Image (tube, rainbow, N blue to C red; front, side):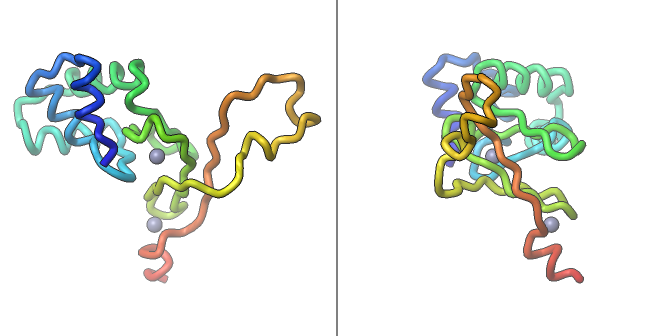
Length: 139
Ligand SMILES: [Zn+2]
Ligand SMILES: [Zn+2]
């Protein structure tokens, strides 16, 4: 588990019933949901939840650094609770499924000084593209 709920509890995040449902929906492994998917899943558990509450909670979680925004290829932004363990993404170009991956090696070390243009480089996010097994099986 990504232990998002536990992390938020430790930080003293104000946990109303509605905000708790947002956190519960986002908790887990390989979770990369769009805001609309979070809203749909939260509403399935708590029908009275409002769009504004969901969007505000998502914004707060991103600001806190407990949820990471992931943008892939012009698709809707996704929310990733795996915000503390550095990882990269494997994306299916057909259905958009995203898996967290941890390739061997250090992408920062792989960028030679001549390609850094004097930048102090502090992070790297790689996107690997391909087709997931389900999409590959469909053709
Ligand atoms: Zn796929
Ligand atoms: Zn991820």
